[in-house]
Length: 517
Image (cartoon, rainbow, N blue to C red; front, side, top):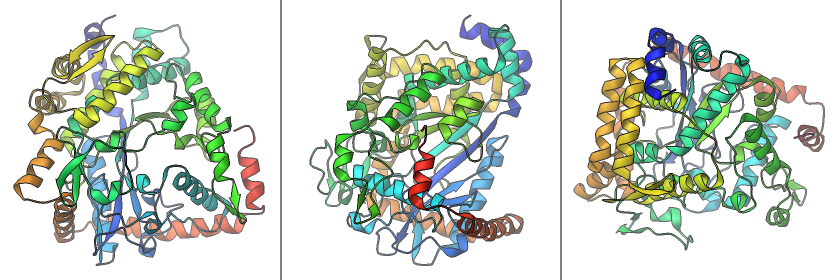
């Protein structure tokens, strides 16, 4: 059945798509007034990062992550993020700002990147040791890169109609998992499109690459390096990469849920000589959780992940295997420094249409040849995506990015018909960037830097100040602020309870955690 035929048959049920759920996770560094990463601990006023549902930390104690709950529409989701970010500004010390870009501020060295702390419980210690492992394996500097993750699930009632249309004799749980895995494969195939359209990291502070000898960047000015046609250096080969995992033969396999779980579990169970050299402990202190290729599944960087709905006490891969896929996490979004939230409604509506296309478009399994094509396209677009006449590989043949982009955009627009006119308008607006690379965030950022004679830090810092002033000037929502005040108190009470409930050593806790990992 063709994509057009599927869309026609699903039109009577398009209203069910209003039951789709979405959420955002937005990261950002706390930056000191001197321009470097803040050395101060996570502000007490924000609660405890271990247990707070909406304000937590990522790799660094200074890398804040704002998390929205599931929402039924872009307006609801973005409003929650906006009010939470406003709360953050009101509770940050006056000498700190919230960095509005994916690539970090001035990096003064590895020792100036404080690793996140989560208290004294075994659960909290495990999160911190995992981050020590990341630092020892890849270096802390790379871990300061920030991004936005877009979480999305389709309404069960819509998926049930799609099930009746496509495979009525198949068990719904099996169909659900197959459909979401098919979606992830199409995200992998078309993954280059996201950094091209939304990449906003075409330049970086020189301090980020200090001591990094192998890169293709050139000098923008005395403080900044860039690539003239780059879209997203964050997604390129100076960003977070699992090169050693790939070399060792560990590659996320999206051809079925069973393949995906097995591919990551193999990485978690396979020893790595280089990590054995680091050692598990030094002078009694853990250097990493284990010496395997992957400490835990989250260490494997992926632009898209199938996720299970949260099951307390279960490891993520076990929850996926036992309960199936609940939603998809799209992880390849840069933070746009010119946007107050780093993302806007037009982008969200486009992403919804894009994911619907990825669900409905035919999605055969990905062979090793096609995977190599996808990987090469991703790197090419990250570093040279706006280069005129750039050619990508598609089904073994060379094709101009604009030609392939038009074909995909036409299909995304067809899918947007099921979602409504606002979505079609968003696809049209974003789609203009295919023919007009100067409209992409990466191009606009470089153009504005040149026009204002600003390097990466000065340009981004100016946006940081502007956003802070704008958010502090806005009228607050007392109900939302009261909610976050309560969550801050509750999170610390929960962390204390977890710490008090511990009845085993950390060694025993880890041993038990990794049984049948």
